[in-house]
Image 1 (spheres, one colour):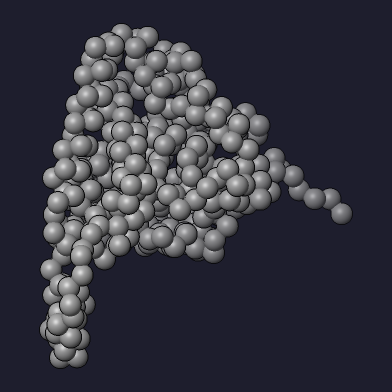
Image 2 (image 1 turned 60 degrees about the horizontal axis):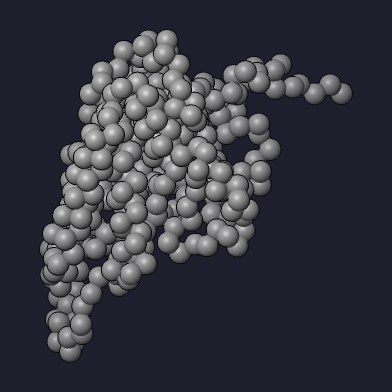
Length: 381
């Protein structure tokens, strides 16, 4: 019996599996490939600001969680390039159906920072009225769908939205983000299989950060790369260095153009590393070698890599960089100060928004709740 190898099945070669990279860890850039992208200095600096916003925002908000001021937080530290680079390649009318670490994409696309902070507090200013756990924002204006904590469930949603756009004749692309762990879920199979058969204009972006909470990628799949999994469903796939924002941008731009042209779905794998805990509820030192993590933090940091490139090319001076950091820091602090004092959602909102008319039984339960002795309120409950 002769078994077919990957190459005979049309699988990727070793060269094709090598992630696309424009900016090396030391900040050196492939000048010819950068010139071919024809990116303005304004966009190059906006990408940096977007990444810096995610880094500073995460640092401040995780500290707040540790102080008990919010109940939960999940960082995107070390993955800022994958988040911002892919989001920046989308058109304003395109939709994002996120996984866990893409809140920075919503903010980059226009979600007000105060709205995101209000969602963390679950205050009266939160558009979801405190009904979602922290880090679950949603924005119609930014075309950013509220995430679900259930792994992989967003992928059929992204495929369905893309099919709806196709049937309506809307020339939009829908992006379904996922982590490496989601590729082991049945919803991954359902979404990619359906999208492949019916040519849905959807881009699946896998942030392969090599850990699904405590499960390493080696325990997740025997495939040579997550991108290989797309081939079984008839989807083309790209791999990019997920810590290189320009590689993420260029790869995503190609993927979006492919999907928008009517050719169908495409899969993009951004190879990165989760340098932080899975969330504020996790201690990664219990299950992984943190010396490996430290190498990714110090030698492959996406923000420092891009900062070096901008400095070396003369696009960002030390003074301008310091001023930008101060401005972003001030913006984050101002949003926190403005939203932390907001009152909780009014009690009556507990029974609203499900029924057109609130049933009598819910009115009675609300009255019983309102009659209970009041307790000190606070955020993070």
